[in-house]
Amino acid sequence: MNQLHLYQSLPYPLRVAAASLRGWSKRRWRYDRETPARVREARERERWTEQEWERWRSRRLHAILERAATRVPYYRDLWRGRGEWADLRRWPLLAKDSIREAPGSFLVDGVEPSHLEELHTSGTTGKPLTLWRDRAASRAWYGSGTPAAATGSASTAATAGPSSAASS
Image (cartoon, rainbow, N blue to C red; front, side, top):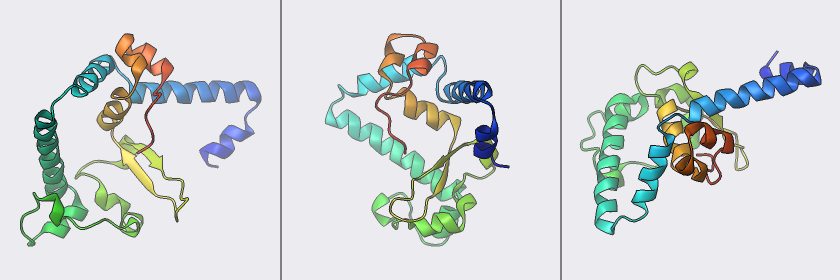
């Protein structure tokens, strides 16, 4: 029996308790005591000059491409013997079918899906995809767009939830 069927079979008071527990679990995954600092950093970036943005983007992009090319099986295999991966313009477009065929090959070496947040696309343009996000990425995503987090504690931010974040 999957989780949804189990939930639907519960009497109403237990459904409320289960939903509350799920919300608490999501809140703990997405927010911590560093959330207000992440929000402050995101707000500070709003005042950056174009040159500051370019330096930040360049460093981030290089780190992401290096990690993918050296620690993600799909991309490591793609770049093996093909030359320089540091130029994003040389990266091929990724087809959704590649993800569907071998989703585990897109995980960083040594990372288990059971330690990640599982996400699903809606499938409105085709078959849905299953994706994963680690805790640090989730906290960065939700912490950078949560106005309540900038004004209160992480528990305040977690209660308020993200107001401007969309699913990735």
